[in-house]
Length: 69
Length: 263
Image (cartoon, rainbow over all chains, first blue to last red; front, top):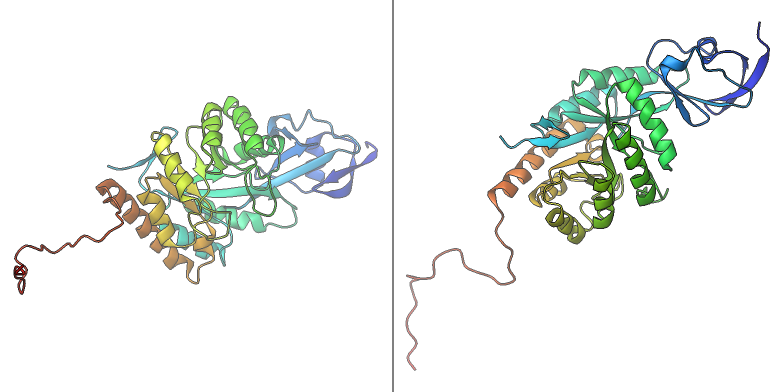
């Protein structure tokens, strides 16, 4: 089992396993296709989730549709 | 047929509508339908997987059948806007984007420099950018140079309902960029504001708060629909020139009780 690291997920300090983004997202409860991800302000396409490693201190943003003007 | 043309697509309605601030998602959907809008704006925000509120509104927006126009509301730099645009494109599967780069928190005035930088980058990346901008002619030209094929100058600051605050600049913009599709975005509060924008020759209007915050949003959606149609019809019909002095509309020749005054 990979060791735990601390990241900032949607502004909140969060403990996750030092693992691929796809695993981290799943562990945090994100499933399906209705969200998109940026790490440290850079967009991460869905096709890259499995190859993208999350590192300690990363700022991870997960967004979903909302109403807007 | 007098249709709105944007990035090679045509629309019968010249009213674009926002999906925010309604009393409920059901009222939002009904108001959108009453407005006749074919394009709807929406956005992205952080999601906690435990809360599925966003999914409900998203399902309602989808069921409107409107073309989606995701925005980059709240972004304060070109970099933020470009990242959010890429996230939008992945989720909503559309290249269309209402580009917002805000330069002042108080007035929510667009940052012209960030806007041009973001528009250049996004156009390069294949986005169809509709920038929310001020009514500044030089900025508008720079945005066209950056690759935008349509512009969305503000009528007044977002959510103020003030109507068209700088008519001089807006008229000049229309005259100087006669072939650019231009949508008056933000600041409209009453159907008469929308009609006025259309009478001035703008191609469409985009609004949200004026409908969502009306006492009866569904009825107001319908009122704006009529106002936009009336304004456009008036523009097409050709308005008379305003003048300073009175001019009788009833013929003066044959007026009874008149007689030549003896000298």
